Image (cartoon, rainbow, N blue to C red; front, top):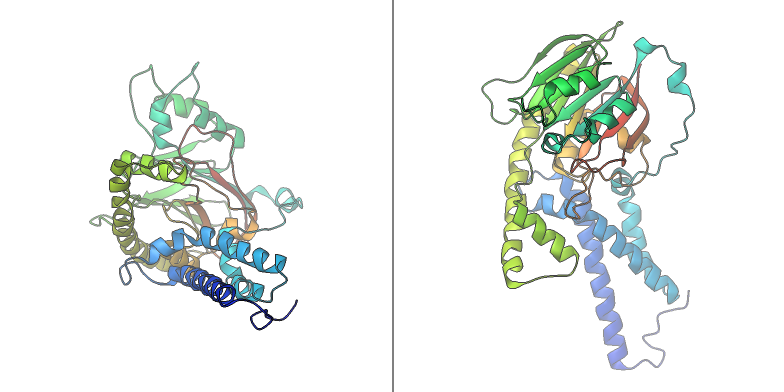
Amino acid sequence: MKPDDEKNGKSPLSRFLKKLITLVNILFVLALLLSAWSQRISPETVSWSNLMGLIFPILIITNGLWVLAWILQFNVRFLISAVALFICWGEVQTYCPMNDTTDTGVYEEVPKTLKFKLLSYNVMGWNTNKKVNGHNESVDLIQDINADIVCIQESGYTKNKKYLTTEDIHNQLSQYKYIQDNPRQGGLVLFSKFPIVKSWYKRGTTNLRQTVFYALNMGTDTLIVINNHLVSTGLSANNRIVFDSISHLRNSTGELANAIEIPKKLVKRSQVRAQQIEELCTEIDLLKQRYRYVILCGDLNDSPISYTHYRLHQLLNDAYVDKGRGPGISYNKNRLWVRIDHIMPCDHLETTRCAVIHKTRNSDHYPIVANILLK
């Protein structure tokens, strides 16, 4: 790299512009560091902390471009963003892990009583219970994946046989002998090939009204499965359309007015999730003291760089971070591309494979699946 050019015949304007560009670069670095560390701060303490986590991938890409721009100019200032990216490498791996996903065959060699495949899927009411030629794409996909345990969020219910009924779903998914349906808890449903010993939810609390706990008999021990649907972002259909328009660089006075509501709603709902997650973490801690095997999954409505994920990751592992590859986008509508569906096993469970399945857009979510071994 060549030395600084500021004293090598450059004009005052040229030197000023270089200093200004460097300052802008430093501001992007500070924003990246703040975004990476924002997950450690509860939105109840600092209201905008969750918003900083949402822009983490944008700041990663931007700082990567800064590195490239300085390198192309043979300027040592590339180190400004390079060092920041190195400091944030753990968060980068959390957001977009780059694991080797080659199947080693370990999962297949383990006895059935010491392993299971878990699928988590927000089915969006089975796409308003749509049925085409007697089939629903989401049900077909669940049948094809053939996981041992299936955790559903937002299951829809109807008795009108023109649409997908509960009977239709149960008939098609006949490989599951054990089913626990909780329509009042956010449409949470569990399909299992293992006996369900019991299920329960926390009564008298609004924070965990869409969380259900299940105890499954694995033959050798009991597995606790926690199926979740934490409070949503609160964005209305108009808000989502506005976000889509902004991402397409389209805007109008009306859209910009609606856009102002978006950060306010995101902040408010993130504060509610912070309350939910504290209560949920208390329950998880108690369960880990009583049971050897605990696994949590579901639609957490928060990205990998968020207080929700950070708190859970203090108690549990992240199957996708450990064995997934790429950003693992699980939400697919209105260009809000992010991984908000998670599978999080305890230390006594080992993930051998985890992936988000992008085979159908029958729901606004893609399913996430993991192969798990009991240790």
